[in-house]
Image 1: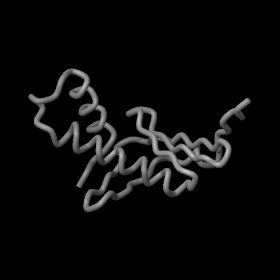
Image 2: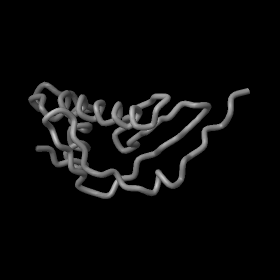
Image 3: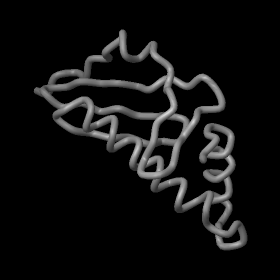
Image 4: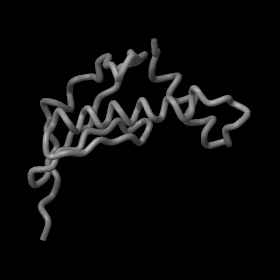
Length: 103
């Protein structure tokens, strides 16, 4: 029987802060908390409003994977011409633009 995931509360209460991926700097536009779970030596760090997650046996690596995935989503939905996006892509684009300022 698998163990139930345990939420690491002291991390969950910290808001997402600005971060960089490559030359791109992401600055949150609203207070958003990361969801951090640890289960049997495995960390998962997620940003639920955009359904993004990073997983690893190392917390910092899991967080980095999350940030890299957010950067991937930015490339796919925000930098893509709007007329090439479907309805779901347009919704994802709007959500990313509401969450982050990127320079």
